[in-house]
Length: 171
Image (cartoon, rainbow, N blue to C red; front, side, top):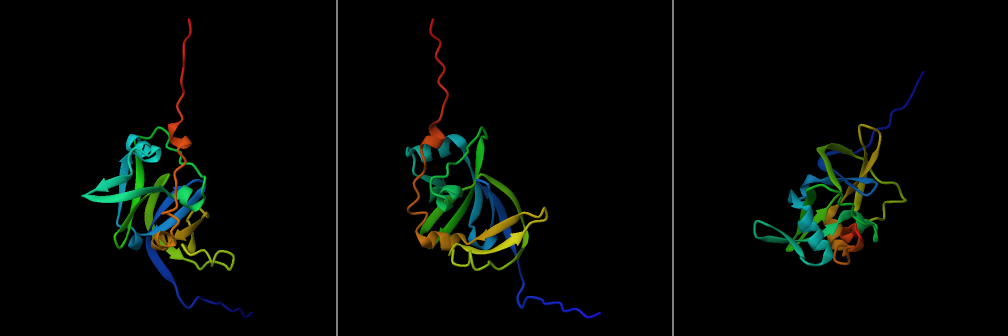
């Protein structure tokens, strides 16, 4: 019996943050992230309501944008009842952005797989990876996302953060 094994010419293993935004999981390479941080829910709500514009860390101001809303306009963040929410701090020259993600799952080494022709034209996706549980995570090139202008055009959906129950008792 004879068989042929074809191996890729290039193989890349990188360190990446696995994050969730909406129903999707993304891998964000460490090389594109300045730092990971967290923001208080009340502060994030103020940003999304327009009462505050930026997240400040060590005297640097970062524009806050929800990753799910940047990639899928109209997608609303689910803030839930958590006291602290995760941010990935990205910097391109003097442009600084704090990407709010639903959760920061883990930091791990991933094997980079090339994208098929259907997704190869999406500038801010640089590949994909198969996670140990069999799910697929797209590898997000955060710097290309900044260069694309998608974050500059991002407008938060205010209704998502102002929902409150009003209970009135009438006697």
